[in-house]
Image (cartoon, rainbow, N blue to C red; front, side):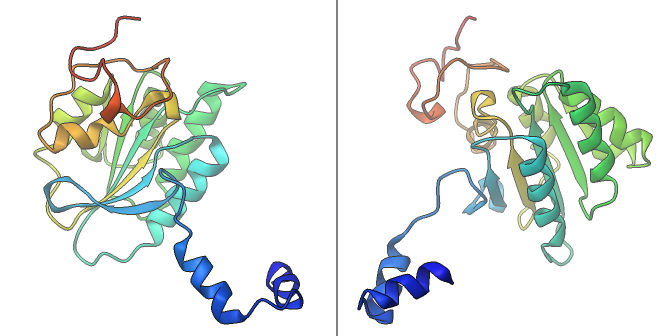
Length: 197
């Protein structure tokens, strides 16, 4: 509101302001709703992951009303944490309090998220752990159905978005849990053959 007030003081019309606002695109990987593989919808929040943004994203996922369809939280590891075990456990505990049907936890630290979700009464057949995105895609493919909502979250260098490529039938040879590259997987020279760390 303050920004709007200042802009209108500069003799910029409200209509001009609205035109400019309509051209602003959200940052890719920051809570973008996208058409997903196999008729799903993806809430893509895969650019960065820390405890606060993960909690916020999971709560947002929980609030979506999608009727009889299901909600999947696909979580890769949160990076750069002082106490990663405890922070991942807290996420597992939180998920059990939200309206989320499935948890798919990817990577070694996410094992703690999965374990804590089960300890806190999330049905074990709805908590899935995978060592990498390939394993996660194999687990997910027979489960997801058209109309389901997928929340995608993980630190940028975990490149959790590869799971969407796999579910879409594309070849992904890279099995790195932690990648040294910041560019999108779709443009990576190692996507098909993999990267040796």
